[in-house]
Amino acid sequence: MTPDGSPGPRGTEEDLSFTYDLDDRGERAAPKRTIDAWTVVTGILGGVLLGTGVTFAVLGLTGVFTEPTSPTLPPAPTL
Image (cartoon, rainbow, N blue to C red; front, top):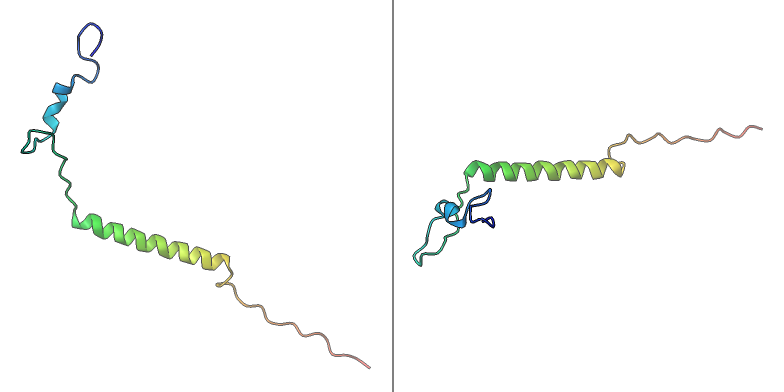
């Protein structure tokens, strides 16, 4: 509230209380969360893809994917 008694830009606590459900004791209950199955699936798929990308990045930095160079032989000695 502002000093003159009018509600501020967000209103009063009573104005916002309708957004909460009340539990058996008359107190505000925690909002119920619902988890969609597709949210779980996309989360798991994202984790797998991120882990795969990190693994390939580490293997690439260590040189696993580079072509091996053919060994060079020194020239034969001449007499």
